[in-house]
Length: 295
Ligand SMILES: C[S@@+](CC[C@H](N)C(=O)[O-])C[C@H]1O[C@@H](n2cnc3c(N)ncnc32)[C@H](O)[C@@H]1O
Image 1 (spheres, rainbow, N blue to C red):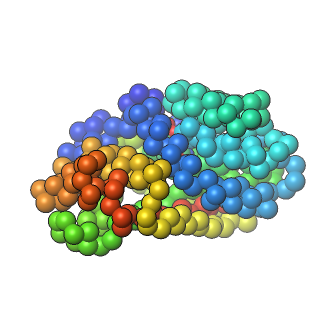
Image 2: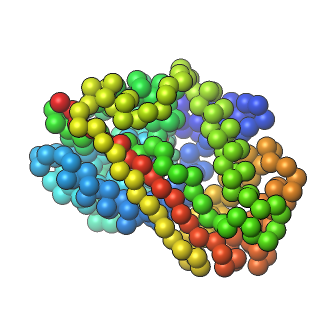
C-alpha cells in the first residue's frame, strides 16, 4: 500500500497527497542525520524506561533506518529490526547498518501495515516515528503495537511536537509571515492525506490517552528540540532545500501568487536570497515522544 505511490489519490481538493516514499529516501535520511544527537539522547531515555532484558527492538515505519541503527548501538544485546512497507528504504537501512559496522545486528522486515502487524513477532522495545499517522485507524495501530510487546516491554511513538521553523518572520522578500501560512496549507494537506487513507477514522489525537486505551501503563511523554542556529552548514541547507521543494510540489497551489513567487526565490540556487545561500536561515523543531509499558 505504501510502496510506489502511497495511498492518496493525488487529487483531493487540489492537494497532491500522493507520497512516493522511495523518492523521499534522501530527505528522510538527511533529516535523521541532522537529528542524530537527539536520536541518541532519545535512545538513552528509552533504555532508562525499559527493563534490562532487551532482546528484540523494532523500528516500525523505519524509513532508511537512521533510528534503527541508533537503537542497535544503544541496545547492544538486542537485534534491531527496521520494519517498513517500502523495499527501497529497507535496502537503505541495510546499507547504512553495514557502513556503520552493524552488519548482523540490524535486520529488515517488509510489512504493509496494518495487515503486516500480524507478522511482526514479539518485541521488548517498539519505536515508531511519524508512521502511525500514515495509517487510517491510529488507535487500532497503537492497539496492534501494544499487542506485539512482551510483558514489561516499551512502546515509544514520536508524533506531534511543533512545526519546523527555519526563517525569520520578515525575510525581505514577499509578505512577512510566510512560515505561518505554510503551516496552514500543510495542515490542510495533512487532513486530506489522512481522510484519503484506507479505513480512515478521526480520533482525538490525545496520544497518552490513546496509549492508555491500548492497555499500556506508566504512560508519559518527552520532547526533544533540534536547534541549529544561523548560519547553517551545507547539510542543513540542503535538507531545507528538499523540504521547500516538497512544499512547492505538494501545497504551493494553495498559496497566493506572492507566496509562490517567494518560494521560487528561496529555491533559486543562484540567488543570495535563496535558502542555500541566505545567512539568516536556521533550523528549529520539536518532536514529542509518547511512551508506555506493557503490563
Ligand atoms: C514520514 S516517514 C518516517 C520515517 C522515519 N521513521 C522517520 O521518523 O524519519 C513514514 C515511513 O512509514 C512508512 N509507511 C507509511 N505507510 C506505511 C504502511 N501502510 N505500511 C508500512 N510502512 C508504511 C513509509 O515507507 C515511511 O518510511
